[in-house]
Length: 332
Image 1: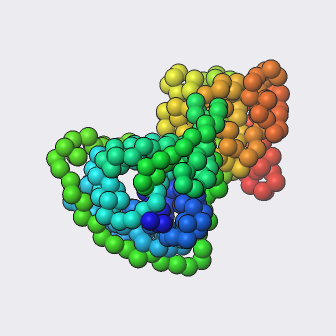
Image 2 (image 1 turned 180 degrees about the vertical axis):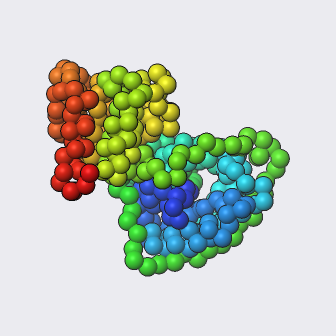
Image 3 (image 1 turned 90 degrees about the vertical axis):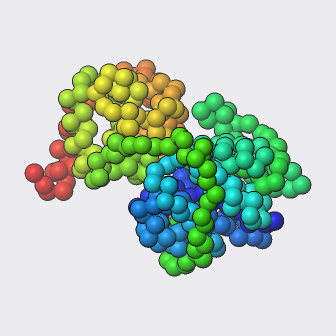
């Protein structure tokens, strides 16, 4: 029992960032065990050909076998149905562990899987030491502390904490063996399901995956002031994020919120404009490699996290940055 099974969430024809992180950790564990990495991809009934191409391409991420779950009833996400499908693969195989990305969907599905196969589950794991018993380190309290724990049961079940381990980079070539799976689902498995989605604008940079994020908070003063952040983000190829206050005031949608109850980001650069830095927001931005803070208040808590600090009015500084970018690029 040496293979590792990973639930993969697809995006743009490949695994999304959190799934790439889960695949990276799973690959290291499989290497230590001398086993293989397997993956599970769940295909919506109207997207099977694209999902099959994605599953096959997972060979570039070290996946030996990709289990492609297809069912006409899986038009949209249904957590219990996904859990039933993954549990069926687990019980029909021989796996040392079943791993999921630490996304809301990954955590929800793995909880269903663990309940169905009767094993404990650890969420937000950052490292694993294998032996007769598996020792895991995991994040608790929104990443403010680390917990050491034993993870028993066979197979072990855990999610990988977002942005806590490096994402696996794909190789130039490689193909997985794709195995079609027809899950055994009941009507009860489909009682809770997504019935509609409000998707972000197609050409908008994903907040979770962006290399640069421009964030705004209460200090911008109004919804209209976010136009200058949109402008700067457009020049940098960046995503726009916001603090919880900005969403509570109705200035921006919750989908753009960064923080404990929003999206956790891990960009190369985070430009925080008019954000004081409440702990809930810092939790969401703690994985940023560099943080540039622009704020009039030199005592704002976010300055303690800053790589670069500008004390001043965002309404003057942000347009000045945009103008300088245009000047250097020679554009109007």
